[in-house]
Image (cartoon, rainbow, N blue to C red):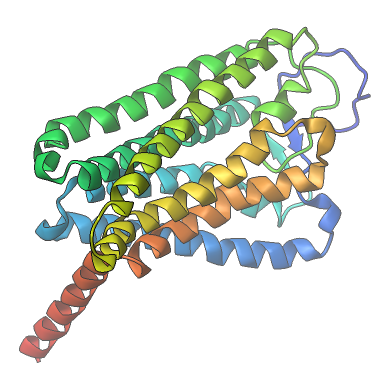
Length: 322
């Protein structure tokens, strides 16, 4: 049981848990937000699971790009599931509490998935670079072994870096009001509860952001500079259009993910408010995961073709049974 009546200045170590302030200020509008988030979450699960199933069952989609897309869809499910189910509960109950272990577990999963996605999007950009800039050697460059290594490295970086960072944060003595001014256990609001010098932790957070958020982002930009240069050299307008269309979905996903991530973690906190931070995080954790499968299905001819064949096959099987 979390005791919210503690004096915010009381220097007593927190061991029983926290109160997530979340969207308490919305009062009765929390029910409306609950319904909206519930529908969005269910669409996220359904969309990403269907993408994984479709790719796994369709041999024509067993290519490097769709191998990475399966990883991305699985990651999005874990990413949004680390936050949304508890948020939905907290929108319905008066006492919005989370245990110390639950808070740590949420931060582990959320940060691991977020950092892994940065690396995975860079791997997907490299795949598009190889396909467009080196088409004759594409199958050699992006062999199944290389794809597995790139995906494994992405997951390995995310897990190793964020396990170390989160463990260090929760090794700090946390004390004070028990109140986290966010709807989940993100790094900045939890660090505010530390009753010890957090300067080294803040440096680490900034370093991780620069190396593992900006680092992959710069690799993505470099890949697209090479891609655009190659596309512009193509002789026909139709060839340029087709080449660019193979990158458009990935580019939209990168823009959506990095647009919110860069604002959330690299904008000085002195220039933001609790409400703006929460809205940015909401877009990052809720909106992006539900849009990604739509982007890859609605803008991709191969995936739409696979959907059409799957539906036709299902209709044909039903007619045969009848």
